[in-house]
Length: 453
Image (cartoon, rainbow, N blue to C red; front, side, top):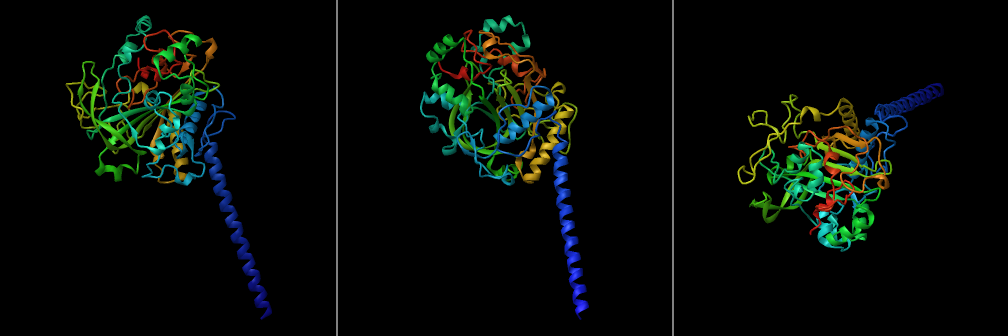
């Protein structure tokens, strides 16, 4: 009896030991797998790979390679799309397992930042009063470009002898409509660093803006400034349940368009609350290393195909494989209907590089590991533009056009925001950023064009 008992105990201990060893092996295997997955993300020597975290990197690891900048872009995107815990700050109590939960309409970090419209309309009021966390936002930009030609310095623009550039600035009253006949609306926001700078220097009136620029040879934004340009498509209420599984959603007051004025600008009517789905996002960051900014652009994966690379299994938002319409043709105000779908393709010169496609797949997998249902797994980096030879503010031109700092790559465009001008680069236009009709530069930014005369 005793021998039997001892034998049984020995067997139990052996089985327990084996089970522990097996569990340990499994945990080691899982840990090793996660480590391998991290290591396969090539961000350049000594540069950390992106991770699902609310920690926003202050700067790129270095300005040594496109791979490094691509990783910096994804790290920025992941942190800035964390759930907001206050105006322009993340909710540090939120976990990665809830990152991008479908149906979560609460603002992300960048969404909680003040819009440019709100800052300039508030005329110095406390920025806390502009907090989107406590009020529903209003969106009324039908075109990302608008009448910029009437506001930039025409003399400098002509001196550039770049006919393509002038053509971009002349884009008037254009809009984008998805294949369901729903309009795309745009908003421009800035982070608290830039917002505080504008408020502290009272740069919300033209008189103050010109006076400040004359004393400082232009307007130079502080390091850490971030600008956001977002494209949202309207989602009919009956489609919300299906769409919210794959898109970051929001709600906003959006106006009806009753017509166009003599300058082909939209005339707005009554505002109604609408559901919106994010289809494009520019993130523009001024860092210590990159005084010419880092220009990052992201899109939803189902926006539009690259020319000649149509995936028939995808239901694209802005492309119909059966359409005979010429792609990327700007609609004409007072002629074309706002509800007529615009056929969009990504031009070959703007195709995602192999390195970016690989990185996108790796980061999307990281997101799925955190939250298998996360809507952020359906977004992709399109490209990143950055200065190889940055020029510090003090050494830059004191008049437009500003120096470009060896900006690379040469072509970068978002199909939802540069739909009709995909064959150029951000800096081609933004080096002309200035105070309305003057020679005073505004640090590559167009936000000050919204300051009223």
